[in-house]
Length: 165
Image (cartoon, rainbow, N blue to C red; front, side, top):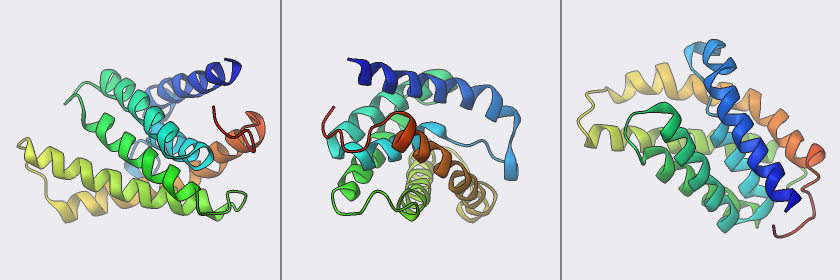
């Protein structure tokens, strides 16, 4: 039960930080997606299904907080959490390059998926403009934030080696 409260606290803190402090600190002209980074790190530690569940919960909270089309963040975060969890089965999790690489790939995949869904709903964006003004700067920003978030999961929450939730 205590572990669930810690995870819920990290999820809620991520939503609050993302919508308040990081909304004002837009490095590279973009606002980071802390829920994506938390979901990726969580999936790496606990596996596909817990990553999927946290992605569903975090994406739902993000959709509620941001307005817009309900379901885009739910779908993308759930898929990315599952994918990160699947990757977590085959990689050595203590290497700091793993969360960086998975966060970068997840950012690219999530933003491209969101772009496809937005254009399906009638958004008139240009892909290469979106790629160079949003996706690539967001990937760099997530690379900077992945290390502290991974450190929180690895050391502060003492999640390493705990197995299933």
